Every structure is written in C-alpha cells, then in structure tokens.
Image 1 (spheres, rainbow, N blue to C red):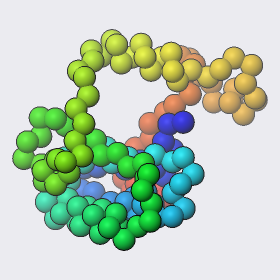
Image 2 (image 1 turned 135 degrees about the horizontal axis):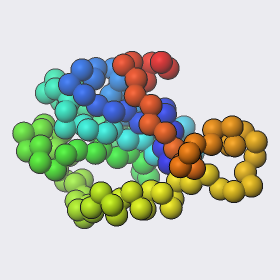
Image 3 (image 1 turned 180 degrees about the vertical axis):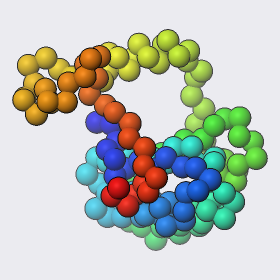
Length: 145
C-alpha cells in the first residue's frame, strides 16, 4: 500500500526540526513494524540546522533501536548538490532511472484506479479520472491539520 498521511512529510525550507524528528521516531520505533512506509519528500530543501538534526536523530535511533528492517525513504532532488541531507545519507543513496512524464502518468493511472464494484465508501470518493489517491498539502504537516 502507498504511505498514508501520517507517514509522509513534504519538506520545505520552513520545515521544523520537531516535524522531522517525529517522522524519524515513528519510522524507527518498535510499533512501526505494521507495514508502514515513512517518507521525507524534498528533504534536500531542509535548512542546514534541520538537516543536521535529521542526521543526528536518525543515526542515534538506528544505533539504539532493535528494529533492523525499518521502512524509511528520503527523497531528494538529484541536482541539489549543496544539500547536507544528500551528503549525510550518501551511503544509502539509490539512483532511480529517469522516466518521462508520460511513462510515470501511464503507470500511476493503471496502479491507482478505484477498483470496480468497491464498497459505497470508496464510491463516495470517486473522481472523474477514477483515481484513488490525492495529495493534500498542509501548512502544519504532522500536526493533524
């Protein structure tokens, strides 16, 4: 399954240390074994102080955590060469192939459709393009707003 709202943090230069720490704690705590995938999107946009704290929290929790198969993804722009996050997590770096916008859209349209014959709850959220996923951006992400 795709990550849910409590598993994703869309980063910006205004993202606070507490938001990042909360997501890292969720990803590396003993209760995170229930198939959740925690993601930091645009982590290259974090200011230096927050990026430094991300590194500190992550490596401290990994060192003292008994969890070995956590699911924590950090997405960065490959062209952001001056990002501290990219430097700090270089050993974990995986480069993805460069797909065209059309290839990505085609894949997502086939993977994220509302199945026919679904329950009334899913039908209540039907959209013109039959998509089952929406992105919601919040000024206070991670605060329940």
